[in-house]
Length: 278
Image (tube, rainbow, N blue to C red; front, side, top):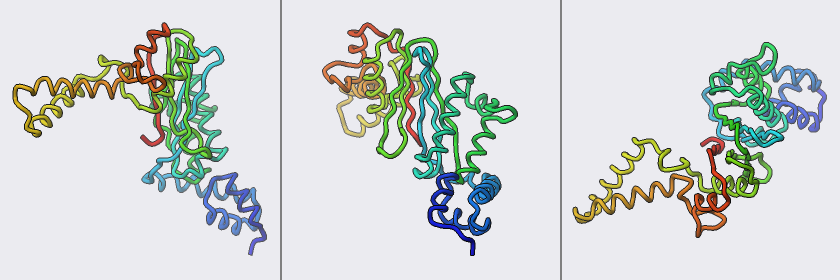
């Protein structure tokens, strides 16, 4: 039997993110040599990448990177299978490297990002696959956001104190106002609006909401003459829930978000909210 200790198993888990039984097996096969065990796990990991494709990656982290002058910023969501891997230094280093790459290259979309070179001769997709192999779990990069031009700020929310941020919000104002940027970003994190204004809601979404409201109202047996007013009220209720500017502000619910922005003399140009796995 190979000569190794529980501390060696722990060290190997920290280095690779692999499961305990996989680490023990690798140490058995490498006669207790941690470096050789790391190499063995990486080789096995590369072979197992395809096998992991069908597995679910619903844990992970959202990372942000804001430029020193606050005129640009990025959010990147990197997903994995377990919170054990998500809170590991190696996983978070991969996520940070991806955020830095997005900030440096400003990819137009996800396919462009995945096919770009993060290192000489290595695409982002290959970089993610390498993390997949090293960490022994399915690793997925499928969302990012980048704002450039105005005053950009981010708010990161942890759902558990020992885990990396699970929710990230990026906001862009037309002028600097750190207090408003933070407050609005926190509001977005909590209330998850889908759109900035009513005008941003796609026509087909509005039509669906109107149809559902009408069918629901008829099913409730409301008088025919009252239908238009009730339906309009329900559609307006949808707008209030789904659009940011119409929502009561989290830090002062007597005012709408729009009113708070107006009183501060700033305009919210756009926002992005990313929650891991959703």
